[in-house]
Image (cartoon, rainbow, N blue to C red; front, side, top):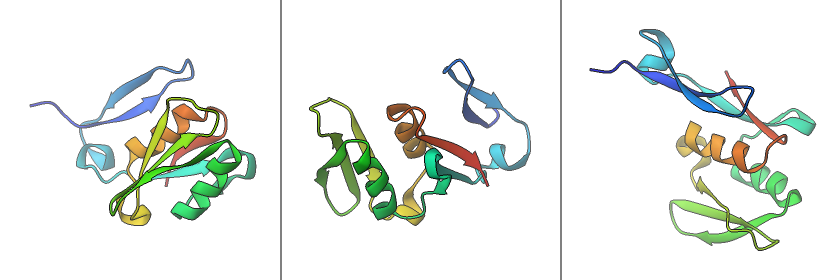
Length: 111
């Protein structure tokens, strides 16, 4: 059986699985936060994140009870999927999606 791990971005932009035998990463209890770099602001709510993304050209595209999708106003094909229940539903995969599509503006940090 494979051990757990954490997906991390290397400085060259490549994402890789960092394997760990014990600790928070292996048990799935690693806590992460999404930070808006220019203001060093931790994104704690969906409206706060939408406000920052809106200033970067993102707007709501679709929403339902569980999910909010954002797309670029300039007609790009990228979508960002976010859970409506931000506090309970935001996962690392959502955070890294925001980071990858907005390089230099967001980063994921360990709490």
